Length: 567
Image (cartoon, rainbow, N blue to C red; front, side, top):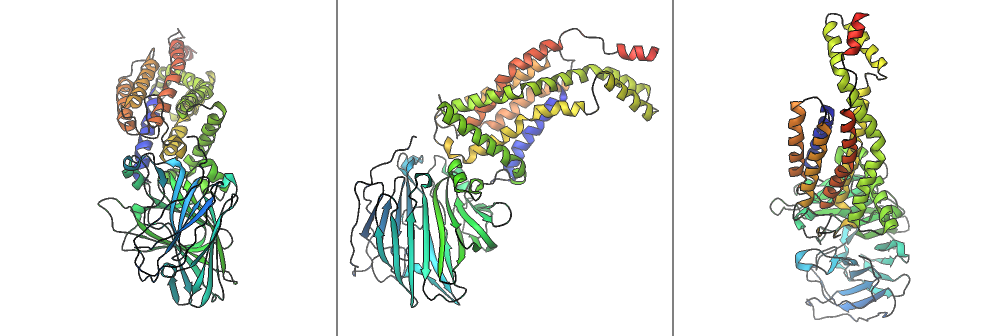
């Protein structure tokens, strides 16, 4: 084990520590549809006529109930709430402007202590998922002040909800249709039409102020809240809630293909299908202590000449493969690693595809998949590491000879360089050999960095138990995995120093680095610690074999120098 190896470990620790500080960034079953009650205290004694329509034996159903919205002002009639059930989620809508008011995900249970085991919900109760305004010339009309008529269609293929009404003398229609394909769960197709719309009119969409936390660590979930958006040209951009000020409005001009509000594992994406969004306006809201749980975010969608507009809403999990199928770079809704994004993101994509393929192929628990993945990485890199370590041993044996030449030709740099090059050539090496010998040792590092970010937002790992670990996406409650990682690192360093020339610095680092990284990794995802520990353990046989090779007798390092001096 030489100094370059420990230098690589130091650089690794620096990158792992600095990057997060600088850039803080179940088998599913289809349940039989039923009806969801939605009641609110009435604010008016005048109630509109309502009907209830439901289908009891198909994967989707629609229900309408009378209610009034206590959070809307200037109401003249009780609001009508419509609930749509699909195979994987329930959606709630209000006749006040046709706004979506709730999204409940059947396939993902809440891990939050006070609601553990219940269905995950994306927005707080009595809140709003999406609200709308119409900008017509100099007038902007909030649709939540207007009561619209509701029409529903319920069937097992593509349920839909349509809202109709009058907006400032113009007939207005807002329709939601739900994806009929099983691969497009959590997707809504939204269309709007305003008859006789003045030129330059636009539909303004207010995004959710926040997403409801469904996680055991709600603080960590809040810290992941961000708005991401995809310009028509350029890369995906992301703005954390904590970076927005309540006294300033941030405007990003379009064209924009999609905008998303996300937390650690879930997101709400608004994606243009015909005309891109023209802009997004972002503003922070007053903080709660050091936390920034809410923002004001709105997007503008220009109406076509015929007064129409269309977009999609994806409200669901940050599932890697599902987002990839949807396209449009939605799988990059959470740009990893800040300024290291260009390096880490490709590795993160490769790692995710490999882990998902291994999961499908082996049908093993994700914990065993990580164990297998760590062993495979070490086996794949075995030849490269073998060559790197042997190059390192050669350099150690050449050091006395190189130092002697440097001392002999101190006053003649040109002859010194020629003599050193001759030594390299005789031993089949070059001045780049020390550098090339280090590179294979650094190859596992991008995979480790990628896994660090993958564990932050990969819902596939969410709530997965393994052996004593209740959730591999969270820290080890007993600190077994970080301690195992630190011990395995120390053993690997100790074996690597056997039969090496005495080196006090290397010996000191062999004690310090395992301790430093163990402390650093204490609160990291237990799955990440598991992978790193397995990778260290898998490297021990190679280290032991090379240590034995290093201990074999070899020609004295100074013999070539002595022979050269005689000639």
